[in-house]
Length: 73
Image (cartoon, rainbow, N blue to C red):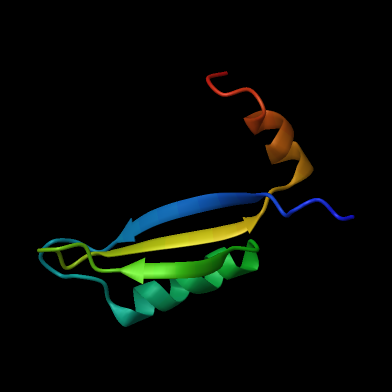
């Protein structure tokens, strides 16, 4: 039986209080993280903010798995 997929996560906030997030900036950002293997599964607008919070995941790589196996190091 195949073990369950382990994930690593990335959270980014784009935009500024005054200008928000421009579509072209968002598109460039999404293209860049997509090329790195990230899959966006949540985009939200925090309350009282013009910013966007983006949450993405990708399968946890062996190198990252070793690095993350000891919290606090």
